[in-house]
Length: 337
Image 1 (cartoon, one colour):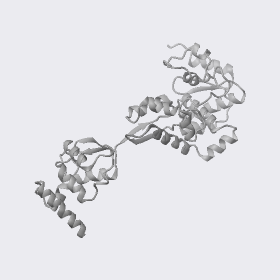
Image 2: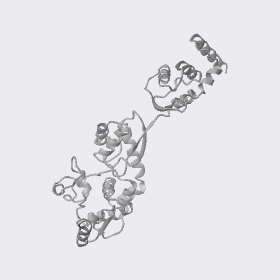
Image 3: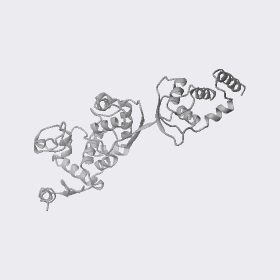
Image 4: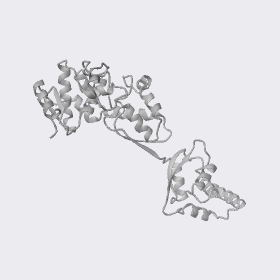
């Protein structure tokens, strides 16, 4: 208590010398006075290494406090001058100096939101991260395609395609791309339970094969309730040694795809053209969600080998090529009236 009084006296002497005619009581009262009303939010940044005085000056320049010197003295009296945390903050001109100090000390930095929807591929995720202002698109994409980064994160694949889990994330500014990526991969690893890992072994599939199949199911599914049926078609075709013949994999293998798949695309060999290769492609084509991975591991029991879009988000499933051709004529080739 004595020490605090001594410090207060010293500070008040400094205040007097600086022409700040305030008592300790008045200073504390000032610290609890709200600013402008209605308040205006401002994004305020404390760079790494910036001291209290400079921070106070910028706060005053931004209209967030009325007096930099008073704020400096107040912070020192509160013994918080060494505890201000670097980062970006959303502060309001209606906040009191004490409230502002609380934000800066607790490190309640502004978080940037980025949403990764089910079915996004690495290029789309990199674009979303860049649009959120978190990391340069090229830097992020390069890291996700770096085999060493995948290895360091415990992923047995050459890239992280399929392993950046669909979810909504919040990150502070200045976070490195690899840290953002690691967070998304950790979310995938949390979602892929030990039960799923055991089920994959029982099916004779690796985790990578499950994620690959799940990514295809994700891209082919319009109506969520159809995922297990779509999965059953692919499982049945794989068991019979039939090609998967799924357009999303073909599209993934086309550089700079313009949105219009053509016959020549189906006839051109790429490692992802499942009209040309047998079995699964070498890796996922997008990030599947939990429902798609669940469907890949627990397909419906069916005899279906084909499905065709009804152009309403659902599919017609068929067990024979004859039934399938009839469905194609009905839903894809019929003339509009």
